[in-house]
Image (cartoon, rainbow, N blue to C red):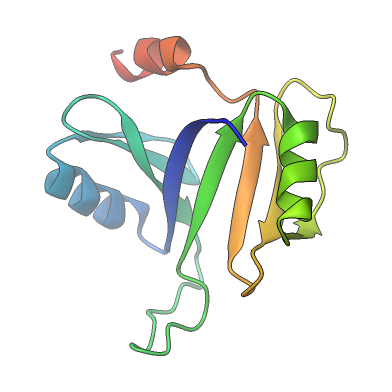
Amino acid sequence: METVRQVIVFDAADLRAESTFWAGILGGRVVEDDEWHSVLDASGEWRIGVQLAPGHVQPGWPDGTPQQIHLDLHVDDPRAAHEEAIALGARLLRAAADLDTDEGHQVYADPAGHPFCIGWGHPSREALAERFTR
């Protein structure tokens, strides 16, 4: 599967605290939306997403329950990526309404049950650069 971007996504009840922390660690900055923050590293690359999870509970290390983090894979061809993921052993957890839409994502689980998303049509590097330099 050829991906155009990989983004690690953290769940958090306090978007600003979490995203500001990771931006500081990476020497970067944050682009904020209401329920999602994008964390850019020092070079301007999008590295981390922070997703609003109002009921977030910190993990009980080392158990790690409930889910705390997942991977977003951005692709140009969602049908091919879906077929490849399924062939490799993924389970589809939440299907998109239509794989032919301009933008969307589907949620899968890896063989051990860890969730990840395959998304498409999300901003190109150029669109991200334009948006993040505003």
